[in-house]
Image (cartoon, rainbow, N blue to C red; front, side, top):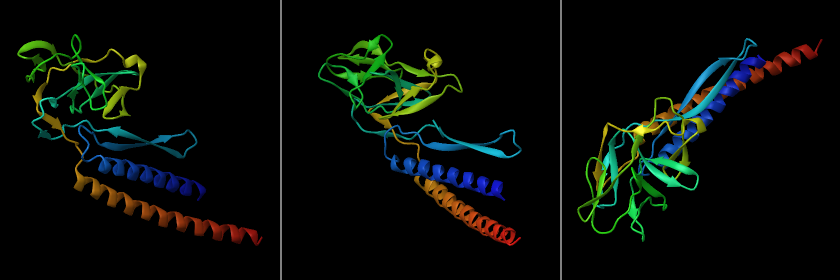
Length: 234
């Protein structure tokens, strides 16, 4: 009985985490370049005949819809890859192309992080144009090409805030390679890939399942209480 209660408790904790992930997805439904998370849940044998549950969020990197902004500093990736960003913590990676030109003529994120090209920071003066290959021109002169990279399948990426991703494993640094399956759209941004209706349905389902677990837990507790009271009579 104690083991059944432990398993039910683990199930309830997993559902709480699922609700938190869903709530975060919904909170970022209008965040440019945001990628939704899903909960990955496994059952592992802990070598004591009972089962231990492990739960962790996994980011879903499927393409979001492209929205035209007519702002020439905005760019979106249609296809595979991430823009490379220079941060104080090292290289960052993003799909959020809500860029702008700073006072030094550098292309930067809305938080001021420098966008990297193949030859260093993307910078220049004059009217900026970006073609579908990611080549950046200022007053018609080629300045650099946006560095759009991909990672081998299974490379662990983590969200580090402000639409940026970092590598969770230091040994994975340098594994990125140029993407060969993308086009760059100037004057567009990629919207969140969160589907509001889908997330609401998930939230309702998880809540109902949590309620069912709660009822099971209450029943198990009542049975255990009865057993203890019966034993105490002897």
